[in-house]
Length: 373
Image 1: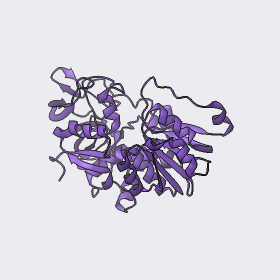
Image 2: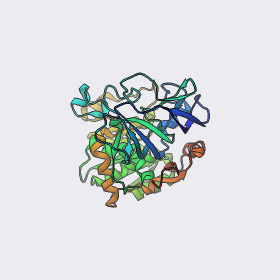
Image 3: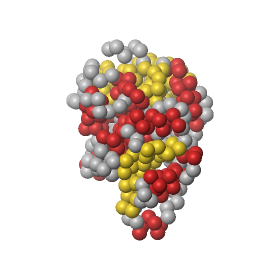
Image 4: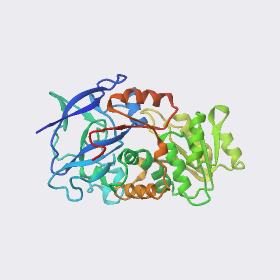
């Protein structure tokens, strides 16, 4: 029987999210029902709200940075049980396709299917209207139905409102440093954009032992926060050409690794321009459809530079999520400092207004019905 839950629903691009009651189906044999405790507000969802990224279908429930408690499991699910504390990840995977077979589950050919269900039926509806989600998630709701591969069991001592950030901000930022760039001790890094993801690139570089970490942003408050996360130098992008500033800080050579965490054409091209010969630029921010980058071919080729797009930190969630929990519990990974405020589901629109203002890291929706379970 369908279960009624409260959710924040986007009906039209540019509109406010509406808090309403929706119906969620029972899980299919390979799915899990999770009671959401924490759900982070991410820029990717804001891009869908504002129209710079297309919604696959409307109405939709956004939210893809989720942690909670397992309430029900399908009969084919063997590695998750009722009562487990889990972090959900958008890297849903089938384990059968070419990419999964080669270990690159984050590139699964079926990852954009709604929960990679074995049947085409919707799992969320309001009356006769089917409601979509983002990446098979729909985290701005009291409960979610997830494919088994989207849930990773974690230590129950980990606070779930903080664990939610592991599913996107942490894995995208820290994961890119350790999995894609493979930063080595003593190397130099630049990070363009110091929001929730960029701050995690900074601390990922610190964890990797980078010798110099240069934070670049337009907000002085974010640059100050970046120094707390491990930045050794800061560049205010409004004070001049950030490429020239980074080159000046590195003796004209540039950095070994440049990370772009905003998702716009100018800063993506700046990331490549500030890399050293043999260095690499890693594009993490989601660029809007139709935007093409211009690469200076001669410099790119003769200086042996690399330009790499990175999806969700090139992460194997089953291994990386528990690793991040361990780092946090050891005091080596900063998560508390990422949370600017905890809000209710009814305050989600105000949370996105603050994100648009650009002066804080992350807001996290906390669902009180389960937070003390």
